[in-house]
Image (cartoon, rainbow, N blue to C red; front, side):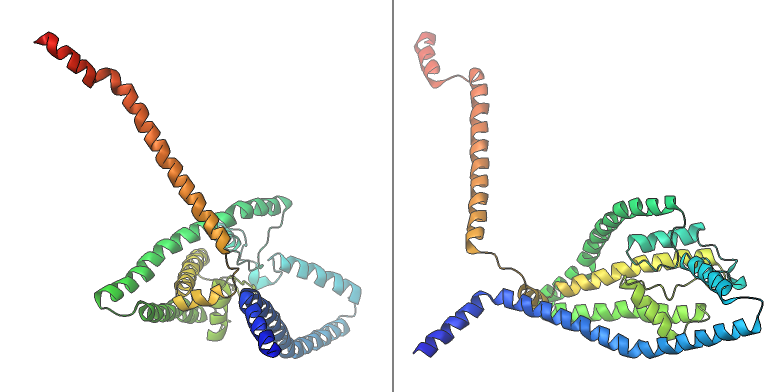
Amino acid sequence: MLQSLAGSSCVRLVERHRSAWCFGFLVLGYLLYLVFGAVVFSSVELPYEDLLRQELRKLKRRFVEEHECLSEQQLEQFLGRVLEANNYGVSVRSNASGNWNWDFASALFFASTVLSTTGYGHTVPLSDGGKAFCIIYSVIGIPFTLLFLTAVVQRVTVHVTRRPVLYFHVRWGFSKQVVAIVHAVLLGLITVSCFFFIPAAVFSVLEDDWNFLESFYFCFISLSTIGLGDYVPGEGYNQKFRELYKIGITCYLLLGLIAMLVVLETFCELHELKKFRKMFYVKKDKDEDQVHIIEHDQLSFSSITEQAAGMKEDQKQNEPFVATPSSACADGPANH
């Protein structure tokens, strides 16, 4: 008897705090996923980093041996200055002297990466004034961009997602949930084809040093706003139509970001995902719902009473221009 009571009390306790338990498992799963990613990246990339370090040491030792007039300290100073300039997007190589980082097309590309929070990091402001303006520009521009993207995605979602699903549901009688799932999958496939596979093929042709995997990697890193900066298009030597190419990439990133948000919004509107997300949310208490309902009723009742009082005041203002029944009856015998 005691065991059954204890078991039922535990079940009631778990059901009462089900959202908290789900949220705790969500946090634990996220932390485990972070650790899993760190383990995989470390095991895969650490050997390549070690090989690269050994190769650089050999090259440095060989260069110092071949140039005895140059000391190792002078070489360290020179390399430090070169790497510092490279972090600001300025290269000392002879084949990179023709590309400017702050012409209009490059500045437009930089502004789009700042506002979209992609931030490749290949080009950064050099002056203190540029850094200060970048802060002010981002503080105003990022919320403005979020507002712009929200408005655009809402309008696009109405025409691309909600109306087609409603049309097939009403016109052909299909289940709305099934139509929504099929539509979301098809929209995702079309988006991946138009903004990942096709652009990756184009970048692999236009960029001399990129293969298809690297081009696809750039598309994904860019449209997911990760922006690692290891692959940036239009930075090759003697890039043809570089200004037009940079403007085209800016348009591609903006349209691709909108398409990604539309797909995410489409999947988020699925009934199954909504039900799944509610497992981790804090449930509203019934008392709070009742308070909101009472407040709403009080506001509606007060608005009705205010309207009635306003109508009475209007009637009082119009009374001098309308004859009362008593005065009409009093004037009747006199007229006869």
